[in-house]
Length: 140
Image (cartoon, rainbow, N blue to C red):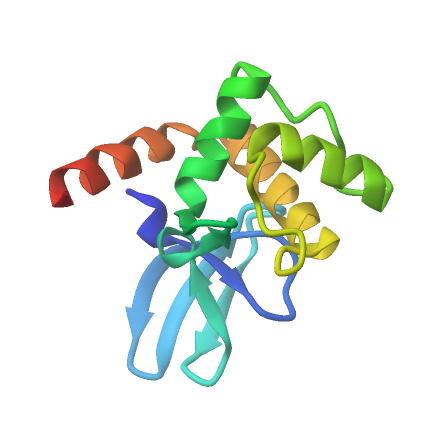
């Protein structure tokens, strides 16, 4: 399973793992509480492997940003919580991705990224980041 099976669903907290597809959408399992829910095609769903972060020069894939957090934290939970102040979140993210575009990457985005990193770390899913790195290297 790669990051293409990990989803963020608009209006729902946390991340979800794709379980199976149905005729009208799919079934996803929450990484927060393990509950399953049926998601219709009308829901706004983002696949983690398709998300990128704006920098001053390019868009960096989310898996690379999460890998940088993993390297910074040595695979442990992030040292900054997602409920910290805006300044503290921006300072932390600047250490991770020094050239991120401060005009287009908001504190709420940084909160989400930290929260997603911690969820993946908690569920021992950070190895998916290496799988993503390998598959993106093969594509180049």
